[in-house]
Image (cartoon, rainbow, N blue to C red; front, side):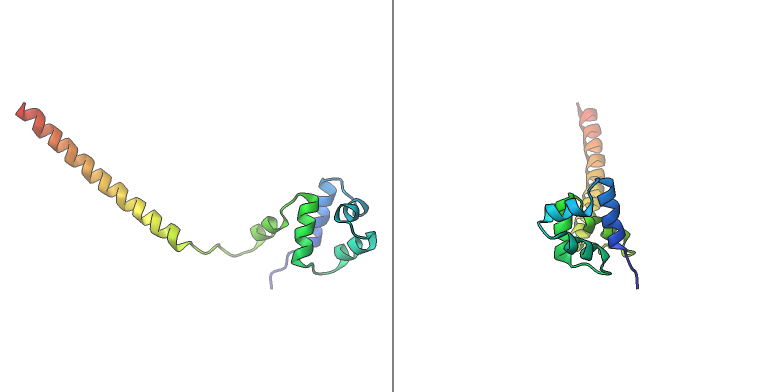
Length: 110
């Protein structure tokens, strides 16, 4: 099972932003012992992580997502649009050739 140490990430961000547990507890309007408990538990609730993201102005979810070893599923609509773009590019090339031929014929007629 793939594990991410979210608490290490939170503590790193706190250090980078020069915010200690006491300051964070004030920002979250919770008791100091509650924040230290959150930082010491092996897991964290999603809602708490959202609150920490807001308090620290940091997207923990993005960092977690970047560490996951999974590829994002391809968007079927995006794939269809890319195929359509390729098709239109090819059609455009053909039309440009036809225009050149017609311009050449017209110039010879004049």
